Image (cartoon, rainbow, N blue to C red; front, side, top):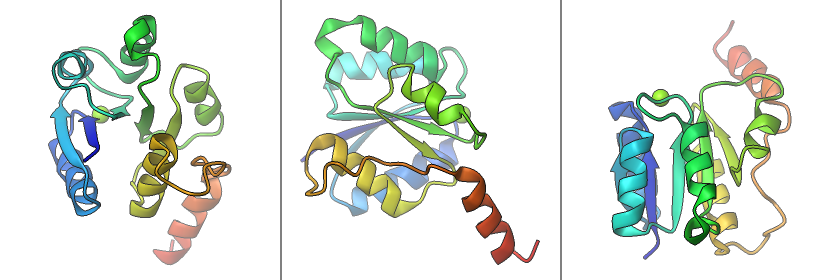
Amino acid sequence: MNEVLIAEDNPVNRELLRELLETRGYSVVEACNGEEALRVIDESRPDILLLDLDMPVLDGFATVRRIRENPSLASLPVVAVTAYAMQGDREKVLASGFNGYLSKPINAGELARAIECLLGTRDDQDALPDRSDPSQADEARAARNGK
Ligand SMILES: [Mg+2]
C-alpha cells in the first residue's frame, strides 16, 4: 500500500485529504508544518508528499528546498497544495523543486491523477496535473454559484 504524507496546517483540510486518500486505498500520515514533515519523512519514508505552501514554522517552499538538499530524498515526489490561484504561481512552484501542483479547493479526480502519475501507477503518465488556466476554473465556479 502506498503511503502519502499530508503536510498541512489546517486540520479541516488535513481531514478532507485523508478521507479522499483513504477512499482510494492509500495509507496516510500527517504533519502540521514543514519541520514536522521532515521528521515524519525520516521516520516513515512515505512514497509521496502533499505539501501545503502556507504553513507556520517551515513553509512549503523552505521544506521542499530542504528535501531537495538531501540526496536520499531526491526521488521523493512532492506535490504543492496551495490556495494561491494566481497566474504564474504554478510556474514558480514547479521551478522550486516540486513535481506537481494542486490548487484548493482540492478536486478528488485531480488529486488521484496527480498521485497516480507521480507514483507511476497510472497508464497515461504523460498527463501530469496541469490546470493551465486557473482563472477559467474560478470563473466556472463563480458562474455555478450565480455570481
Ligand atoms: Mg496552510
